[in-house]
Image (tube, rainbow, N blue to C red; front, side):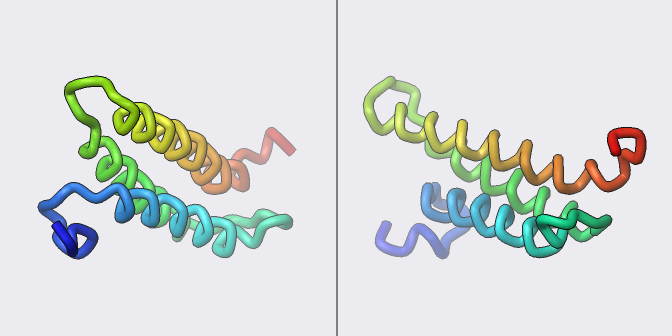
Length: 98
């Protein structure tokens, strides 16, 4: 339990949250934010963020308690982060939005 972050078979909130937040940072760097340009490599960041969201969802408990509520808040954060990453991925290809 001490090194759950390193074992992929064990549940780890830290691993899931770090994957999502590092994917967000990578997508900002790859897209060249504030002048967003096309970068298909953001798709890898999106896949890593999806994996991180799955890791976070694995930590949900069947019985509702404050831990469960905290994991739900982290899942909402993951959802907002995924929407932002997919926006940075898709927006440069949508020429009609400009």
